[in-house]
Image 1 (spheres, helix red, strand yellow):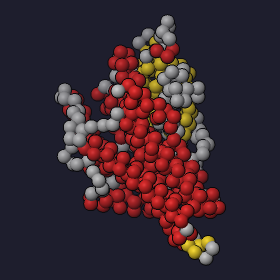
Image 2: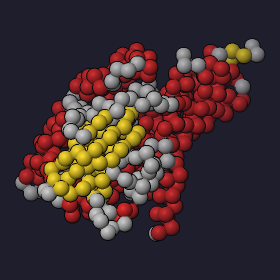
Image 3: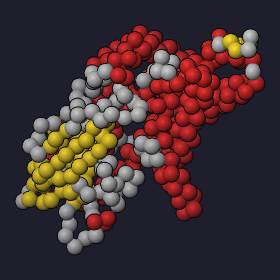
Image 4: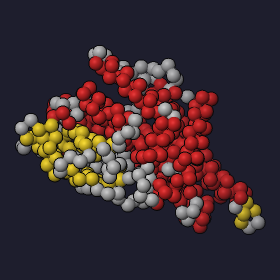
Length: 407
């Protein structure tokens, strides 16, 4: 894939019109108000039939699994249109509100995908479909106050056996959708006396809002992604039956625990490139317009060579990140996926590119770029988190290097 096809461009233009009509006018409210973002996201999903498409795919997968036929990875006849259909809204939303993508992606993507990949048929039917249609809000809880990048090694949240059930305790932080989540995938370690804490089994449990012992904090204040609610989770002896353990078997769950989380990281990291592309495209668009109309020393600033260099570098970044997105779509179309190291490389480059482009846009706008009145200020704040979440730049570098050295 070397460019957007004509049908994909039509989809992009239609989504762009929706975003400019429904989301752009609400940026002030989404950025600085306390209203949850889910109503406008649900409207978008309904408008483009994404909810009905999710229902059809869900029914198809469940029917195949009940018939004993797993989902085979094979080339798609649509040439990647399905992947493009998922990525295009991400790009377009990120032109104005990257936080909406975080809220949407964690619920419909990470949380639902975790259940669909590791859960039993009964668990999928119980929890997954409402997440895939955004009827319910999901949260994927792995990060803890004391762990950060050492997600597994520093994990202190535990599951303690109590007869045929478990008692879950722990504290999770920086949880996207945490304050409003209806369904939570809670990742913790099995309490195994005599086993080193770092080596204990990693288990995934599905929890529901309102369970005794589960407390969801209010919204945390943060630098950017204001339209994405972030919070903390506090668990004190939350009782969970085996039906809430993803896979419903300790051995199966433990086997998939770390690997499953890494698969989720890989998916999340691939998605960062699409977010970065939306930010880069919008910053370039705004910078071009400003360079043509802003006059200094009697000339439009776009005539100055240093400004031209900034714009040229923005375009190089746009081309490179777009090509990464195209490669991802092409892989999906051929039934393939990136390795964790490849997804890490994609995230590392695109996150840095988006942050650099956004900061250069602020510089190009000068004092105006530092003011909230101009959108580049918001995009610069939002872009920075791409270098932090789903694994920091430093973690991406380590993952890439270790993979190369081991080959």
